[in-house]
Length: 389
Ligand code: FES
Ligand SMILES: [Fe+2]
Image (cartoon, rainbow, N blue to C red; front, side):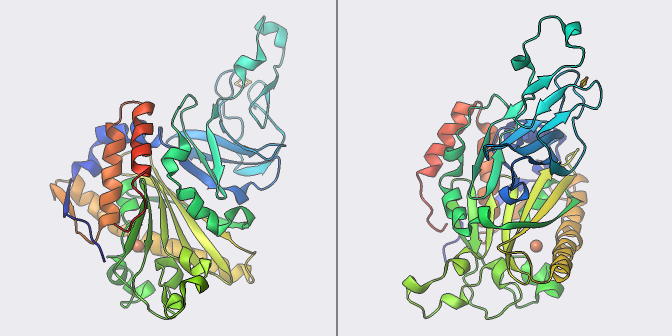
């Protein structure tokens, strides 16, 4: 198995410096495409949901023609939030302050007492609309309405791989949202298996693999386990390939091939599970209000509705508890040590190349001064192929 060429040392301040955190928000989170959720969360025309990304309140809606839109949830009159509802089905939104109304595509439909505003072109006062890209049953948006970032170049064909799941035909089942440490400390836990048999010994056993095989598409990665454990509790999540052994390649099934952890740069991780049917947990790890805080949303979607919904919810609660009480509790303790100057750097081994790849990409994106530079970066990375690294 190939490993990273070098051991990486990363300054502790990368996780604790408020100025760096602000730069990451501005240069990374608000410039590159971010997943806003699975398509099946808003399957029908009129469906919408709200969420907050990097302090920006958004409405994600599906309009009559079937397309998804991402709108800034701020009335164009004086900025009031149009809706606080978490989700619903509506063709239009009426502002609770003075009653302006907007279509679910963001068009301004009506102004109360319009004559008092003189000559006003409604086309100039629609809701701000973000660039949206829906592919592989996932909805991406860029938090800058004027962005010229090329989303397919950014994805480098990764969405073609994710398309194999056929998420657009799956069903949305459940969601959990909870707090964690610095967003990169939290995300680091999704990028290596090294910690699994140690930190998760009580949840997944000491016999879980600690090795990952990494495949990359630009900044995005897929991690599978080279181990062949049979019937392990974490077979789907870690990507054990036991079912493929002794079978000719033509008989390899796509379900087993999709096992493992799919990380979508910079904030998303997709991991398979079995909860009375095939499913994935899509974890969205977003920066919180300060450098030491993050907010994670776990979206649980399944190929078919779970055969026993109550048992499935219990399993989701279990996953949430593992992440909160094991991964994020550990991350929180590291956060305190790094903040208080307990270490001047952290170290990623040659076996932790998922983390190395991620942090290198954060630095690359931070260093690109314009959308054009970002596009060149993504285009050149996309041409490097997807060899295991
Ligand atoms: S702020 Fe929305 S109508 Fe006035
Ligand atoms: Fe973990």
